[in-house]
Length: 380
Ligand SMILES: NC(=O)c1ccc[n+]([C@@H]2O[C@H](COP(=O)([O-])OP(=O)(O)OC[C@H]3O[C@@H](n4cnc5c(N)ncnc54)[C@H](O)[C@@H]3O)[C@@H](O)[C@H]2O)c1
Image (cartoon, rainbow, N blue to C red; front, top):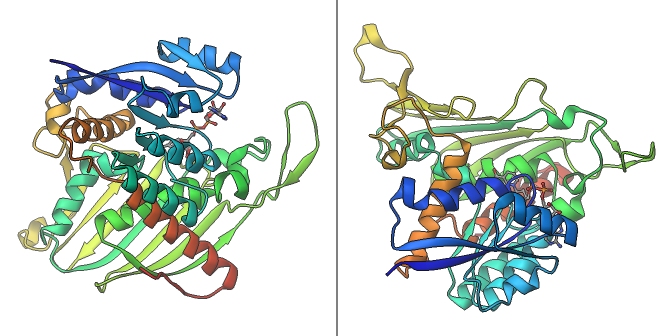
């Protein structure tokens, strides 16, 4: 018997269609046949946005009150894709009303709220996932396998960077992303949250941090129809050094949304005693791999084409290396694991709200370090 998993989505903005595509791909790409996601209802900020989101995304119904979804007996999974300052209230309400919750990153604007979300989901025993989808890019999962299986030897260094350039446009309006109250931070919260999560995923828990940050465009226009500008109180760029718990690995993370020419330039390199790996999201189907055991006349970074032999390979549309998985597939892989964990009753698909909370702690420590111009230790 096929189980209809009724999904209520809160927020139908730019990233919503990726989630919708993922629900549609579960049977076709991931061979999940015991459950059929049903796009039951979408909540938006007002009636006209909600109606338009339902039509555009293919939901059966719409509402302008998200609590209709978090409290409905007819919804099983709440998918939160709203500005970050709304995540905590919506996620906690969903969990307290017995809903499984998928919430976009960063989990909350601050670590205390992220912890409350984690605790609410744990108490309710519901499945909970934070949208750190880059963990689910096959090349990234494979890099982790190489690092953790000691194929690279003892790990020495982790260097990661996430650079984009859309915010270099000084005429971009002062949206929710440019305010601490609504976003929790700037480039560090938006892009840096992914990088910090990758640091935890690829290397381990962070012990202490030391950062610097800057805001290059200090004011932005408040609306299209006005020249009035108001101050931006979040970073355009942050660079931080990391030390990890229980290991000697030295880390560096960088993030900026004003880096002209960089589009989704999410890169990382791990260097170990016996080898290295390098990944760049602008070339998602490649992993650069170096082994010091290669013959001397053939030493060099080798381009491994990601394909059926790699993680998530069975979900490829066309089973040939290099034909590729795209951005949307990382979200598809994430949602497939979440739905499987609901179906098998384990509710343990990662990254969970615990990971969202731990990443928020690191982000907060980096911000604190930037303000104090000092190293900051994390407690746990
Ligand atoms: N994982 C990723 O790669 C990725 C990429 C982009 C965005 N995100 C995250 O997704 C979230 C949303 O980002 P976005 O780019 O889609 O933003 P967006 O501004 O395009 O969309 C947010 C939507 O929420 C709606 N909304 C506002 N108030 C609401 C309310 N009370 N009830 C219901 N809906 C409401 C807005 O009208 C808007 O349509 C953020 O947390 C962001 O960090 C993640």
